[in-house]
Image 1 (cartoon, rainbow, N blue to C red):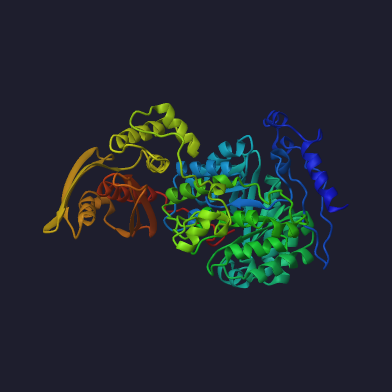
Image 2 (image 1 turned 135 degrees about the vertical axis):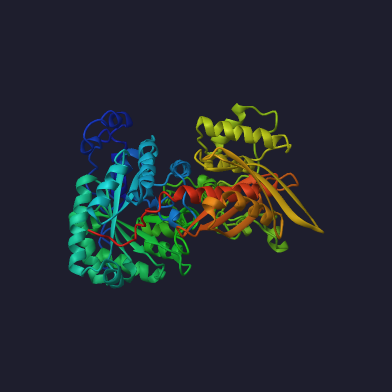
Length: 609
């Protein structure tokens, strides 16, 4: 079968009478899950390339057929809500996770790794909620949960994701000698048997199973091939190759992927996936090399957030494949000028996704960040400016609008704007709010509109994000504050705070080295009885928009000395001192609420059986 015939066969299946409609699928949801999704078409393989490499599998999956996605594409597996959230201080509330998950669906990622369900009851509930809502959209992503290779982990994960149309269990075990010896305390033989048993268990509970060999890039290759072969035999449908500590180089990653295609039994029936961290600054380059080697799924995060130096950045991988499509087409067996997209991502949702994740996690995007940074499409050099004015292609390799950066707002909002216009703009910005959140956001909007002539999209985003982060169980709420400071005056702050637990209104005053320090000292006098061991780690302030009447936006990070965990808080206000105090209280409230959740487990903690 020629390559052209392979493509024609896959496309013909997706649109033929042998496929299935949304209605026929939905009508069967109440029956046993194994019967709800029709069988995928017979396996379709590209011709085997030279050099003993087995073909890359291009068989359309049931998800591909149902959503009409190209089976030859690079699948985008987003782990912002799992690995990204593991970055210190990036813990999100359930509602914040829902907002991000909805946006990831609009971005059209293929897989959302919604979390680690066994970590805590809160994590389980968040994954289950995402599966039940986002996993049942008309054009749904696969909803995936992470599970260590243990029976209870896998069973818990299966239950959490079961409500999605297309659920996936992602299970893993370490395969490098250093991990097996010092973390698992298992022999190679034991790891192989655990892989066989636990992948088999996962497959008995869920049709779509992904298996990862943790620290694969530092594992012995021959042993790794053996483990992956056993995983396929036990039922894995995707094999993930993690560069867990960001150690490898592009050439090494490509070599390992090609080695798997030569030596792993049954590899031609599985999607090869890659996961990697940016400890040496090469994560995206490593992924691009792995794609050339035959990987067809990339595990990444918005803005590259994640543990230590972060993960490979989704936006950079996607735009590299888009801008350099003619180069990568040849690696897919396509003609150089073939115009078919190499991913399913809606690139115009990239910038919006970046802003949302930055706000929800408190992780600011550096100005020189590729694709989404504030300076990504800015030019200051006179020579560059002259060239761009004559033809933007002289110094820009992509259009800013392609990633969703739009300068003008078609609908101007002001103090006379009503609720309908406000809701319409929020919908355009990608926000889905409940009635309470909408009411609070609209009230904040009206308050700001009395102070600003026009309200920008950035202002609205900041207001709405404040209200999304509001938790009704927050103990301490700022009621009033007054600050006195000047060139020859000792900064003094007076704060009035409502304690919702004791129903008391408490007023305290304090001095400090500056107005913010004085305000924080006064806050400590109020919360000190229950939160006296919190340390401010980071304080940053910026303006949401330009102009003298711009909203000020403050982000803080604090560490709870009792739990050793880091929490962030953010707030926006025309008064930067009010924003500073509200952000600090937000972080303290997060720390307080987490004290009942100290048992939240990290997926890479020691596995006990």
